[in-house]
Image (cartoon, rainbow, N blue to C red; front, top):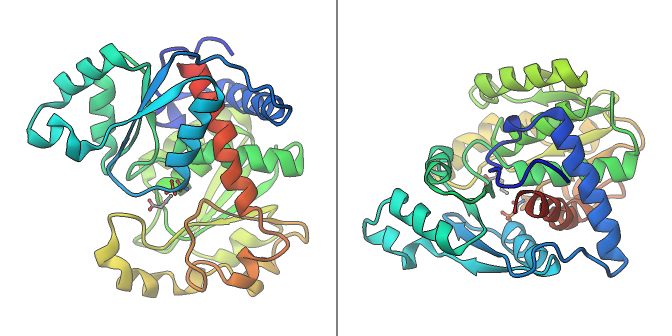
Length: 309
Ligand code: CP
Ligand code: NVA
């Protein structure tokens, strides 16, 4: 894969439609090679630093195993154990780490902090989730839809719930791949207007579209994919009660999925809260692809790591 070496991946909006397609094609290729026991050893001797300001199960393990499979390894950078926690600045930290490492994956509270790190680092910075983006998740999601549906251009993707980090990146990836993305979000929890405007720009090139509605049924009608995420993301715990009220009509349940195509896919980035954003009947049912999707984090991220590092 060409021309991505040294780039950051903070948001998919920094990538062209063509580049997102190329990363997904590369992920398919790397997955096939991995399954054949022949994952390309392109990161031999390379080191990825991993920094988490929030909890993680999938991101942590899939990045670590992904680096191992590519022949490289990871260094855990616990912010509390670093001089950062004693007031060393981002500039000195980023410049120093750039002397040792070949890339950094960071899960941070604030996307602005990740941009600040990227500004001072001379190595690729990969976003493992911030308040507004989760690009690696979205690449794994699209990889999953492509595997199940074949061609995805023109398919309808319905996202129901919070206009959050996951929804922004999912809409960007879906539109880049030419999908029609319907986002059903309550007032007060809408996706970011500026991000949606950029996604619409991207759609001019790919033919993809994004629509926002307050009606989950409108979004679910004839959908090929129904996607949801938690109502209370990490960092918003004190709003949890208010959110349960605001999202009451946005649960993905048997009734809502009855509007979708018979062979619809149910997707969720996980972790999930059964009987809140989705009923057990749906997430544990025959149309659910959530573990396949979680598994694809590994392969989508290997494509990103191999391309950028
Ligand atoms: N979907 C996802 O990013 O999961 P983790 O929070 O477990 O990494
Ligand atoms: N929107 C969720 C995703 C977790 C992977 C959060 O930010 O907590």
